[in-house]
Image (cartoon, rainbow, N blue to C red; front, side):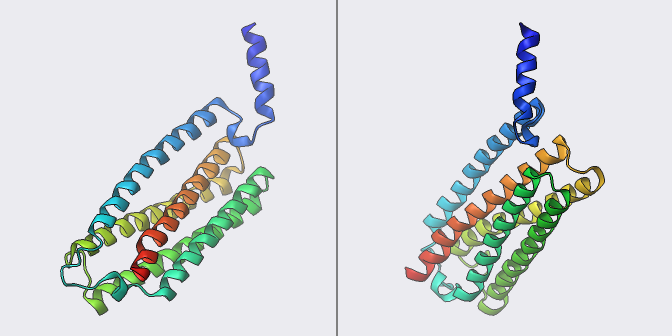
Length: 209
């Protein structure tokens, strides 16, 4: 009976995407969803802190003084496009197309680097041209910590994807590399969702309030 159950399980797994084709893959993906839940708590706390502190400018620059539509829209567009290219990489993963998978992950890395560069330039402008630093006010402390944490996560994602690209180039698409590519895709999409909330809760409210 046990052998027939195992045989049935093996047959069912053959119909699943490659990253779910082993029990280890299942467990690791579930574990990563739990990690994202913890990350959600982290960013929820940072959002709550920022929203409490955003009116405490201490006589320093306000959100309306700092936030410019052009740079912010450029960052948003780049990150949203990177989410699309990351989705295309998952599509190529489903097709077992190694070249397509590597290509779209590489494009995602490039867009991620552009985003980090735009955000670093934004911070540089605030500090050098506006005198807005982490110590200037509670509002700016909440702002820099929230966006800095997100930026650090994006930077980590870039390094992570680069490592997976090396493994894909050396080993091809296997159950292990497929699982890693799928998980890093989940991570990248999560960061894009967080940015949408940042755009709404930080920039949009800063322009209209």
